[in-house]
Length: 122
Image 1 (cartoon, helix red, strand yellow):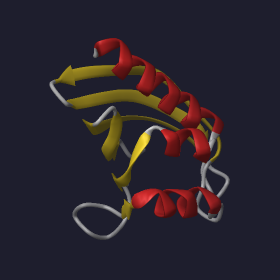
Image 2: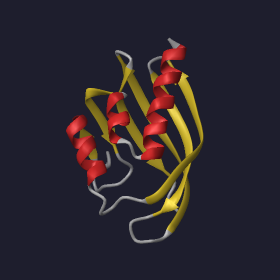
Image 3: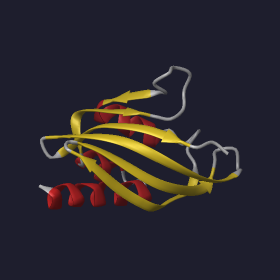
Image 4: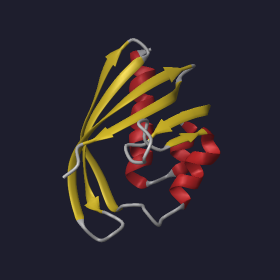
């Protein structure tokens, strides 16, 4: 099972680095939930399902440019995983950023069912 999870997260990470929504969607359940690290609710903005995921990537108005993820590492605790990472790029307003983040993941039936994101603000 560890090899399958490693493969899943490699594919998922490659999808994010390329902003390839089809690759990302192939790695998640149909009822996937992504709790973004921004938004006004305590949970952040919550996306539910593959259609919401696709809409998020289609809306370029708030999207960072040249986002690059590095220093990624996955830590397992059963079907719950924590991913730590560094991301650099240019935000939607044209400002450079460099921050560390952590994502909590849940895996079900060989796919990611939850991604709960946290990032250090600069």
